[in-house]
Length: 338
Image 1 (tube, rainbow, N blue to C red):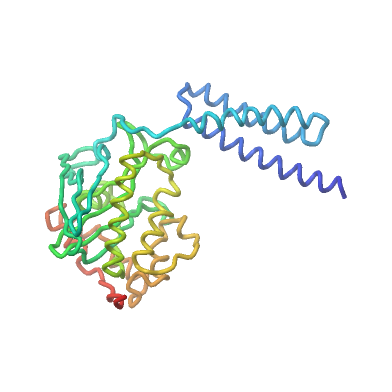
Image 2 (image 1 turned 120 degrees about the vertical axis):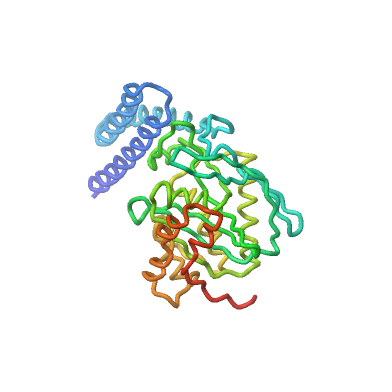
């Protein structure tokens, strides 16, 4: 019996060591500033050490092999925790500035609101503005999903509507440097910093629908006015905190957990754990099941009506873009007053 238990514990320990070594290998590959051959060699070395330690678990050399592996892993961890997000760099123009804001009474003042006029993926008239909004005139909050491949993966955006017809969109994004490439895997390994962008819908959503050719869907939310305001104020607080203390972007958590829980607070429902929080492409179905969307329509019909691409392309990123993309999108019944 003892032999079986030892074999089982050794097998589990070996798998854990290999998994941790795999993480360390990828971390070094994506973050060490060395030549490819050096990074590959270091990654292979720690995996070999893990294999030797896993085999050594069943031999008389268990302690020395485990000790060497542990020292190597501690070295990787020591280096890992020295990594800090950059506060300044040669950022790509679209993420060159971090929005910040102040709130006094009902007046929200924002600095560095993005209002680019896009002509192509890398061609735009770059416009950054200071704007003022009256929070007492907040009327709605909508969320948009942008898909470029698998339906399980999407980019989440929020847009706040005001009585004067203006919409203010917020997007949590990767703050890439000039020449940087997108890699969901690399962004698990502290490769890029986080930026919160606030701007026009024809900029942030229009870039995705009209320029990149993503499938973009708009869903109108059922939310209390006070909760809508709280959600917007939370975004302002997060943007100010990020400007003061940069953070790394993470492909999983930066655009899922925090956003979803804030969103569900806005529609005044409890947020149970659900796999769709991770597979964020399915957030519309999640919100629908929680009653945050207009459930008088089947979900498939709501999705079809919410697809903005044809309307966005017909509009051509005009000043009427926000009205155009909402044409025909159902407005859910208001929630009862608190």
